[in-house]
Image: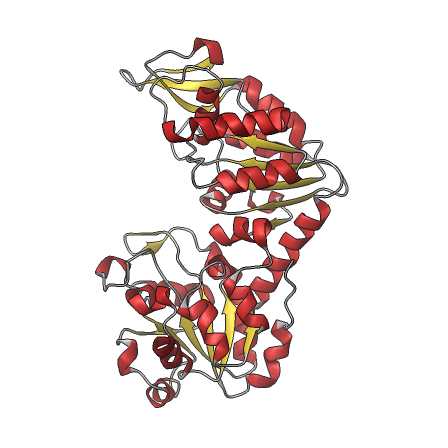
Length: 398
């Protein structure tokens, strides 16, 4: 398992009156020009405040969406700068110029009147995802020191993640340190006691290795969301018109054969009808009809999952157990989340993250019930699965 050789505090001697390149993740949901969930921005505030205290000039690098290496107005950061300014409490200057037209002297002039500069979406440049050396050198020339505060992208071999540390003194940010510390604690503690992984979401194909890893290393794996439908189908159950992956039925059957009772699946479900979506009823597995669409776990399943989690010593939670975006199908997930809130085990350690998990927890009021909530996205699960080989972390140690 990887151990960072440097700390954020090691950067302090490099910061005074210097330009700090800071790779962050403010890939946040936006509607009508307004940020819907500012969790990721608030999480980087401690790092930014220390950099400002050390008299560093800050150059923020981030991405938004997946513009595929091309300029796309829908993914521009121009409307984000003012919102970020309000959250940070410091004016953020948005620099929309192409990186090729920016140099260190140009930035020095901006820093005469501003403390923080936000560059345009780094994924507008195809060189970013190619980890292209000329592009890396250009970005690196903007700063004197590099801070990686983007754990969520550390599994990607991109220029602004894995490339810059080859050209600048580089250090982890405070949040990145916290992410690694808490996830390592979860991994190390999972070898003892009752440990449970809750995996929701739509597709087995995107989480196959993750399911296999947790089933192999944890006491139990609770499987929910549309992903569970494919498992139910593999067991010979009717799932009607519910979302599923036919190509993954054999894989699901193999996982059940290997891990058996370690995989906890729904025993009953809440369904609607494709012909009449206003119908919302609970069905046992044997009662599911050809016209039904599974939307949530049923009362019996909720109680079963609750009773297991309430006894857990270690818990990892990733994703919803039902179609939580639409009422009343958030009920199953929220019922089970109450087990996290009510777990009285003095050694209980819980970590949540990945996918829609943050918005799920905030919407239901369960964010503060977890020992730690990761902003890691895909890197969250990748680190637990293979924490010794994430490009962004390895580059900091080189």
